[in-house]
Length: 543
Image (cartoon, rainbow, N blue to C red; front, top):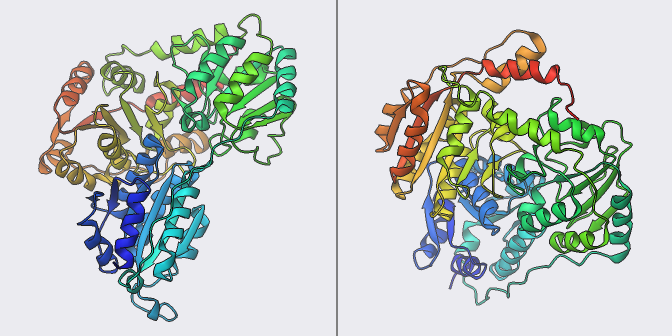
């Protein structure tokens, strides 16, 4: 067999079921080898879409999502999605074809040094220079991509190497297990928690990756400690749970900030520092921090830990709950009620365009607890992250490390493909929607069922919000949109336009039942942005 056929056998050996990408001249041998493989190839309409699909596929399955491009512009189009996966700790293996090694040493058509280009935005980047090393490079890429903290890896595959003969075989797949926590650190942390007057838990995305939600809830309940989550950890404790304080991460004073202001011990569990910088929630640098994760704490002047427990998160929480004394009284019970009341405030408002609070209420009412919302980046992300009540982990997918616009549509396609029994909704602004809307054709070709909910304001709404706050005026944020209903129908999809607020919930329910791609154009009233800013600026802590 040739090296390309061996490469595909190595991917099969890793359990790869699908590759998202675009064929090209320099990956011809790989594309041909796929014809005899069990691996499904999903042809996308842009390499960025392929990378985002691999990104969200990796988040939802825990297995490395795989994307493929050709050399040069194909590879550079992968960059944004690969960087997003790496910074958001989603396992992804990106593959690009490359020119023959006989012309890499000189100026040549479409040739770039791809390994050095991808190295700063991946955990591992390598070029296959001999057919015999294919098994080692593939095994290493998948191992590094999937081990904590996961991220992206990149493989460069020159076309002449892909065509060479080889007798090599795939390597045995092995996975590293997180170690058990040390008794010394458990005892040290238990003592700090037991002596705390106002302990608070901050739950991060690592809990999602470790499938430790149930143990987090058991830990919080046993010790009677309230939990705030980062954007990317929404749902690890149900929003309706009495110990839930909702989501922290809005870079402004919020009710949840009151909890951090009062807490004397902050227990950070599975917290990725990239999600929400410590200087934003630990300005005083005088609180005791307990770090519980599979990897040691990042070095940061505002994140100096009093005790760090490194190991399996579920095991660490179980052991720690057995050693620490329960906290008597719920110091943040009133704060939980204030936050729950705010979730319902304006939720029944019938004014039009639709207020963000009403969109969120109707979306939550239309979806089951296990259904998935993939949220793009923009003003709507702030509202969804702050107010959308997620009841289960990995049901509200938010990019918040790299925070790239354009992820929602390809991300929802990946969700619908990977987990067809769960409904998938792309929650996006009109700006982010048009960045990868060509992938609607991909979804239609795959006969997927998903809903794209567009918050329409004909502007870069988040930037407008920040400009108004900082400068009291706006600069170059307006644009025009196509007719989204006609646009949807041109792909063979269903299109809906919300003309009055009362129509939103029934339209969502209809779209979810359509069993195809349905696009909803929903005008949004972003005057609420400044009202929220004013409200937070006048915040009076309710505890």
